[in-house]
Image (cartoon, rainbow, N blue to C red; front, side, top):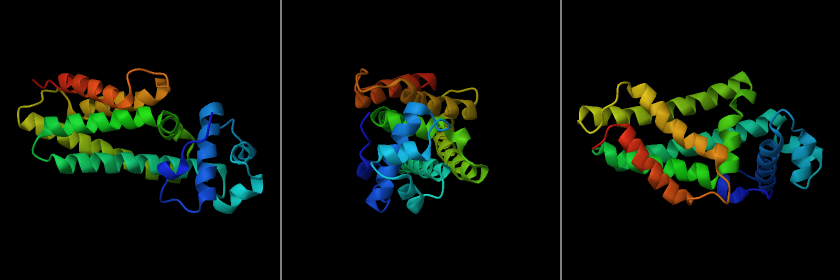
Length: 203
């Protein structure tokens, strides 16, 4: 497995050495799981000595936190932009939201798998930060669904459950998607958007 493109994933992280360590950690966590990965595994995958990791991260858990927080912040920002771009049309907002959310989890399936499925390995204080980002993202989705229900565009028995189902569909893509999977990420996003709108009772 080749290292993810660190500049594309973490453009705000400096220096490049830190980004490379994060990319190597993604590779190692995805292959072995967080608990089976050592700091030496991460450093070796990055082409560095174990001591180099501690220059940028105080512990293995700090690398996971940096990866997880960045991924969840990116998803929150994406949802915020979508909602702001279509404030008066819930079905349009939901379609755009699902398309982008699903495509990201397909395009970045290795990173997304670590971001979404290694949460329980985070220390409590770090988990709380990531959990807050997740709650804020879910609340935005709930707001879109609520607006759709109030406008008569959606019909759902429980908004909270519906929001979690919408996000869960996108998150699950990272579990099974591979470079050889079909359809392509953008088309998969469009297909999932069709399914979600039907699930929400949109006619």
